[in-house]
Image (cartoon, rainbow over all chains, first blue to last red; front, top):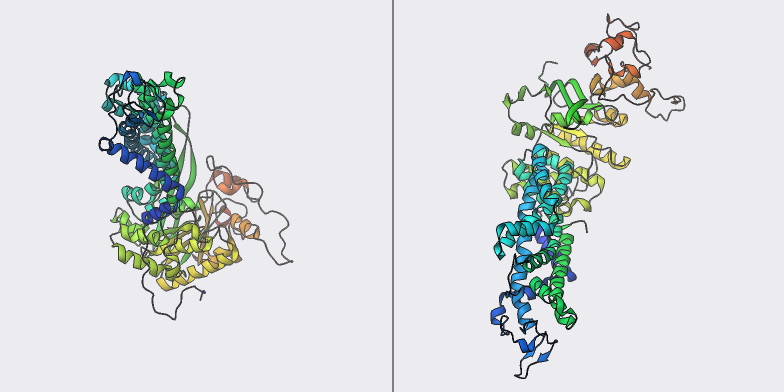
Length: 301
Length: 337
């Protein structure tokens, strides 16, 4: 009789509860200091953006030409302090940036999120099914992928017309191909592993296998990649606004402000760089947060 | 054999197309499994041996229907697939343990979840499946209190293979295919896992198909052995009979290649030269003739059929074993032994 580790003298122990995988992910993420710091910063920015009208800031649309391009901390004779200076039309930068956060976050996150959902779906289906379906989906996507993203965004926006909704659609379409490619390649590699064969041998149907075995192993890398596209999305949106295809002035939007303050870089470099700093901060925080999420999801680390 | 075999495989064939050219046309076929037939009796262990590329793993995957065969019939306990036996039924009765213990476990699931997956797919509720998983862990020698919540990367190779065995048993199968299940383990662990397999077989009344390239392990585990070469069965019979007196020259060569610790029986010369021919373009007639020291004209012209010998205790596919085949050495004991 082979020696085993089980204790044959004691009675059967109570069944060990199996902890959920996502509960484990949450716990590991909360312990990650860098990720939590970034999450806190993002939360602050998001909350400020959501509650912008109630924060007692100056009117972001009203400016005074006499007060254009003032440096940070400038106090008007009336006693109002522009903590972050004023823009080229004399509007308070702090108010512009906080209000601009609403549009910028919206235009940065939503297209990427939509593209993540649609691109993952396409990529996972193409990767799992393989064969002709894979070729049909991926070659179609390659057609879009062949265009440089700025050009594609401008072309689609131009075709659809100006406006925020159209630029959202255009940006979503721009981001679907790269996400779908990553999803397809990860799915293909996961699909060839033995545990997927073992799941098929257990009699599970394709949907169950995808849900239980494939998704958990695929969505992590795809999600990390997708969050790196958020900053790209914000910059592309600013390009579209600059060309009159997206946000129109006087709407505050970080990319648009960045573009209109370009010439002010010589007179007020700090003020002119502020929107860029906001985009930078948000991108870094998203990237580090998604890195933390990826580490938390990766049970080996 | 008067009792019905648990598994009867008839003329199983699988050719993999090789695509080339501009439009991916099929230019050739890899003849991975070509007309394989055998029986597995209830409660026995059939060993399958052969070199790499002979079609052992493809045969296993065909049996468990991970790949669909091009031709041939697989009859499980008298019922054919689609003819009294649904795919779901067959999946419950035939399970497989894979070679790579790490790649066969989902790294994101705890091992209890992995084992419980099969039963849950077939309708068992979560708590019952979990309890069954814990019970199986205990059966394979892993204490559930310690191991149920662990992830695959937290286990050693031998422990992972035990988990794979538990997973294969989760659906209460009658036939378990072991595709090189112990090949990746070190010797001491291998011995433990083999003993576990023997115990489980006795305890649960299982039937095994044990695929391996290690002849000693096959001899230990099997009742009958099937020798494959380049997608064909060359010999199949009682293990002791085959090992003591191999009939087919390939079997004899394989056995004489086993390292021996007996100083009087040294292997000084490699019994077979070269590598097996390409399965895309196999030799005509008998596929072994390019490496067989006794190959003659008839071997090139006609493919030998699998014929019984020794009062039905074995089947051999060789012209030398077949009286009236035209081979000059018919009637003599075959091979290099």
